[in-house]
Length: 253
Picture 1 (spheres, rainbow, N blue to C red):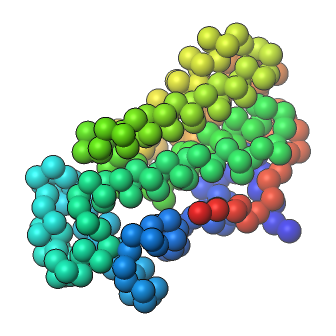
Picture 2: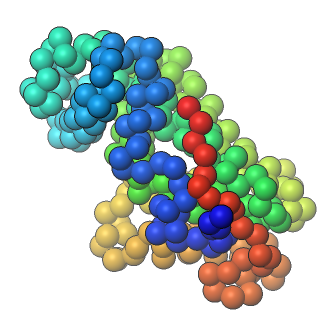
């Protein structure tokens, strides 16, 4: 059985996570199978990749609000009828993107529930959030910039999901006994802001040639330093206790 150390790198995480650049389309199809009328699975997977890659491209170039389904048809090479086999509207398209991001971020903490002590579990969750941004970067970028394109009810769900991720980290911070509830919530909010900064403002880190592993280690060091001497790992890149996560990590639909 493979294991994943608490202070895992992006390379180690990619080997363990069930979500990658290829099977993300499988998860998308499975989560939306009832609304997708195309029955040939291989064709559906190929076209979903075309549709969403084109959506991200058009959203970045002309803006999602200005983009039309006819633009999407031209970009993908699919007819309008073919396009309607996967999506009925731009609202549905935006909702599918938000649903994928929300689903993955909600499942993520469960991958590390058996890790202890809480500080090691916090490190695993922070690293996983940062490394998932390497796989889901266009998805996360879209949700951040185009959240106004979501229907009000979907926008409310997206906000609740973000607060849920923050609350989970806050609960773990409070469980260490080092912080009050209010201080734990504030530190968790800082953690989420750092993760978002890496995901959305990558240009800053390209300018300084900061890689994702270096960024993740810096975030972990910063958070651990708030816990005083007990929070600092005894060896660089090692956890305080030999906690491991079993791999592969499961990804339910």
